[in-house]
Image (cartoon, rainbow, N blue to C red; front, side, top):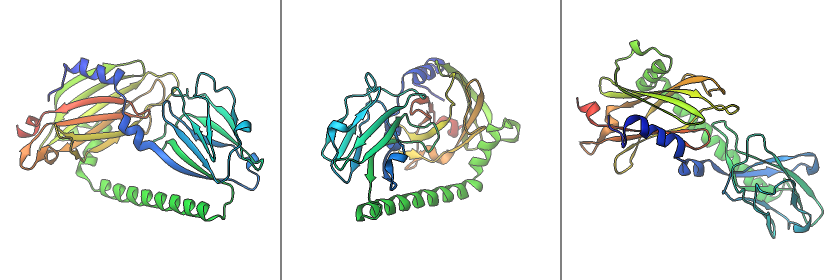
Length: 307
């Protein structure tokens, strides 16, 4: 295995300094909000992120003089109203316990309350990029938006079900599950290298294993954060230097690691992932945590398979 820097320092640099902009963009969402007959009774949450613009788009014109936020100073740019749109841009990420009330008033006098919150930590959490707000649930635009959302959710569920079906019969996922549970002796893997790194939020020890035509990496994570749980947002395996993505099996000992707790993330790559048009290539393995930060970066040498 080869790293760009000595093992410990390479992981440390990634832990403290690497942001996953691509991952954040993937989580940005177009969302629809349908108001009830009494919209003042519902406070809708809007999930915002630092330096990411969020636009609320209404069917009717917005009254800029009666649209306001409370306690936003130092957290967001002054809100902007452009005809039927309200534009928000946080100066930085909100803390997990922060919530900023906002009331949008339409020209017909309708007041719609919102609560600005940071993105959730769950895997399905998102940052709102555009929120379409409809007062008339039966309008063509509202029904079209609702249908679009339903189709997207159905497509996502269908895709996830297919992925789960394939994982149930996948040898690589079975091996990753054994490694995540600590049953190394029940796998064909032998330890090749180990390294570690630490930042203010987490302590990570990584072990690289070589098997029969496969490579595995096991991350043992200690969550040092006082309040936030730690979880994997995504794992990316790519060829070097051209960046062609490869499939990879991932299993975790727990869905999320609570503050002060520990967990294991096991990753298994088949030897075919190293092959590109008949040539063995090195691979880059990137692990991104729940806040979009790249937690770990490892370069896997093709000689792990060639031996």
